[in-house]
Length: 161
Length: 213
Image 1 (cartoon, rainbow over the protein chains, first blue to last red):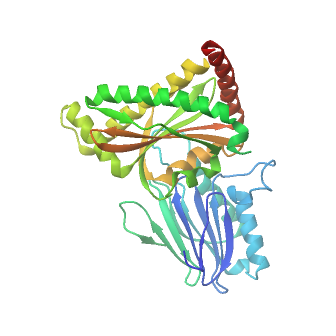
Image 2: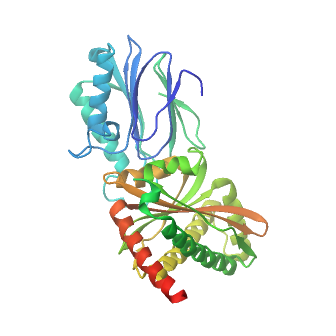
Image 3: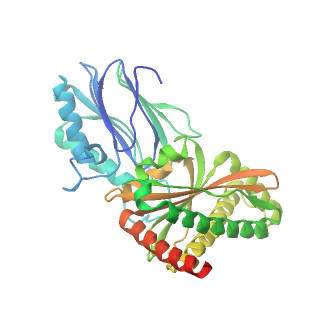
């Protein structure tokens, strides 16, 4: 892994500037939410596991939960000089890996994606790219220089969003 | 909390013995099913906090076949069987040879073979736990997914992440007609459920020890 590459694991997050490249491997029901200040090329990425926090655990592991993760990213980006009006958002993941279990209700993956959309909407950050749902795992690579987000999956062509 | 605090070295030895019997039963089941020689390695056992699991399994983006089921009864949690995808073909080939049936699509056969093997293995491992610990543990109908290892772990880990969770990982190499197949057996449970299992193991260990003396 090069000096500009950062890997973000489940339940973790990062705020970084160009020319960093941030990656996540093996996304299943987890959703990666990305905020990007297109003018200052400051980006934040959270590898989110669950749609919402409860009061017990939100402080220790904010990036695990959609609500606290987005709030933490916004805070971190603003403190580095990013402006919310110049931010766009992208998100990837939220699959249902085991198709036959509890198919009547929304799985964790769908709930994660819905929760993030709702929060972005409230914050007024436009969602400009999305690859969510389905029954397959994903890997991503986010390039802070260009704002490009590459999505990989087994047996599928790489996708840029 | 680390693995050592969850289970002492003595308890871990006992679990290893229990799982060896489970793996032995699994080998017998596979031998009958596949009608071929099945040998197995001594299971390698690891207990750790669940967030460390991906690191224990190695390459997060490795393609694996995974059969998952819920564990219900005295101890609740999830059970997963993982077979690296490159070795899956060996297994399927052997099953097809042993049980020639009506031609189905390749995918349909693969799925049913893997689910059936997961089902059998879960049964024998749980029987081993049941016999030793006098715990009633059952499993639900298995489901299969084939994808990147880490992506398959997401949902079980997320579902359990609201409380501290523990994973028991048993790694066994089966030799089926010279073809090695590595099978990971994973038991995921909350810390409180895992403690229940640990306490029963301790009781069983004491009883077992006094029987032997």
